[in-house]
Length: 139
Image 1 (cartoon, rainbow, N blue to C red):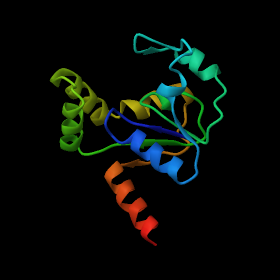
Image 2 (image 1 turned 60 degrees about the vertical axis):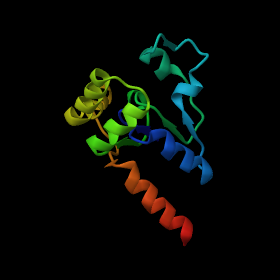
Image 3 (image 1 turned 90 degrees about the vertical axis):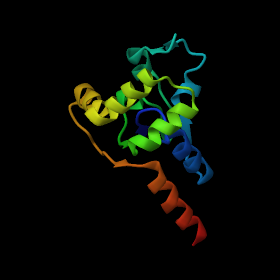
């Protein structure tokens, strides 16, 4: 399964929750750090697709570009995203670019272009996921 979305949607947070629950989730950024597949922030998608990943779930803003049985695209409120990206030090131009990527559903279309199918698509804010996850932990 792949978890994807623009920066600051909560992909890494969700991955940490899955690991805490016993589901092996890995950040592609961490997995690929020393492979040469990422160079100067550019991902070699062809090399990425040839990798055999041995995780239940992977997350990144480009994980939808690899072969996954399921794809979860996380979205969130633009005002919340803007605040998170500002806290990360993103400039206005980069913030606006990311917000526009969410508005235009570019991730959905990139997935479709690569594989001509979306096997599973779930769009939800990570706040909703966290709220429901915490409710499950209390029961």
